[in-house]
Amino acid sequence: MGKKLAVLLAEGFEESEAIVPVDIAIRAGIGVTKVSVSGSEEVKGAHGITVKTDIKLSELDTDGIDMLMLPGGMPGTVNLENSEAVKDAILSANRNGKYLAAICAAPRILGDMGLLDGKKATAYPGNEDHLKGADYDAAAKAVTDGRIITARGMGCAVEFGSEIVTALVDAGTARKVLDSIQY
Image (cartoon, rainbow, N blue to C red; front, top):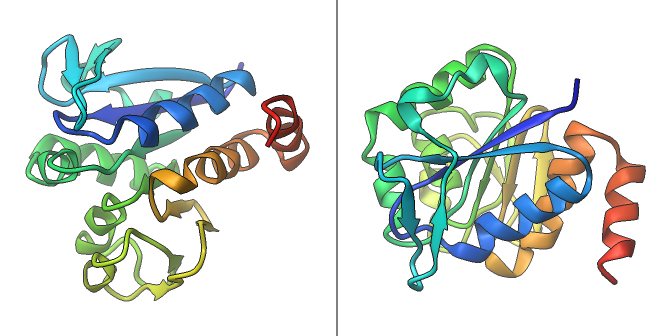
């Protein structure tokens, strides 16, 4: 059975931070489920690009996935942050030993929840105060520490996708995917 990634999409998400890692994961053979946080079948990103989702957050079973991914963007990150259902999904995934991946401003959600304590992490500049207890790396494009993957922003989406594939499959597969996209 293949690995499964669920990406949480809230209104105002940064499109490239969601789609680029999803594309890389699919190329690596990872099953991807696009999850609507708003409950609407289509979710509009920060720059007006609309993505059709597969399920609503209320239908997500975190036991059936291997990783939960949070794209950043504004107001997408705030919309994720303000959802108790999102926090419940994050806590459930974490409790059950699933990977958590967050890019740009979204790592602040994990930090504010205390999930980055003692972990190496990165985030979009200006969000470091939210990374409570983390060993913040301002220069890293993407950081994996245990079952937590964080990345700095849209310009790091390929590296973020590569870290996701490395965690769920292996580094060799990640390298093959990167080579195939001329990275």
